[in-house]
Length: 163
Image 1 (cartoon, helix red, strand yellow):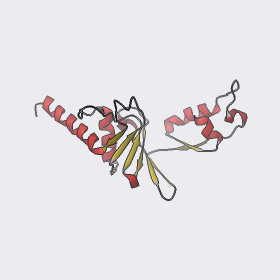
Image 2 (image 1 turned 90 degrees about the horizontal axis):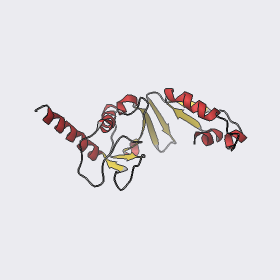
Image 3 (image 1 turned 180 degrees about the horizontal axis):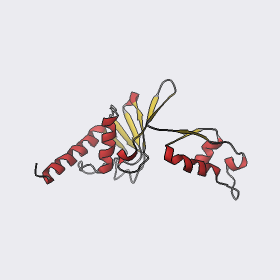
Image 4 (image 1 turned 60 degrees about the vertical axis):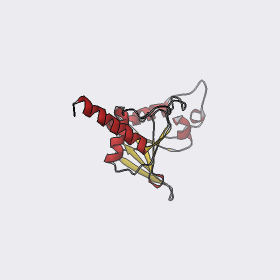
């Protein structure tokens, strides 16, 4: 979908290691089934997100935070924090079931929890965009649920060590 945004002149925000991929996607030819960018070429407007970037329309602020390997998922991972709403949007780090008690946090859940703590984010709600099935997994998660899963993991780790 990046090509439609390039054609419209949007600024494409990427992490440094994703910039080559964004360039490649925008430069691919689409001659068999021409898309808007093939029919009317436009230059790629690319900006890098390193560390943190704040975007605001004057009313709503969004902090884009590169948490990278802290995610325990990939070397390049962005999370999106909306301070006015105490809302954290992320792709696929927090997996909490709809129909079961809180389970011990896995590495990715602990990673996003660590990122929240390190960046001192005041989070009430976490939104997950990667949906396996909304019948199975929550896409709207209370921060308290994430915290409970991390505490459950700590408890189980302590029991394994005999504490």
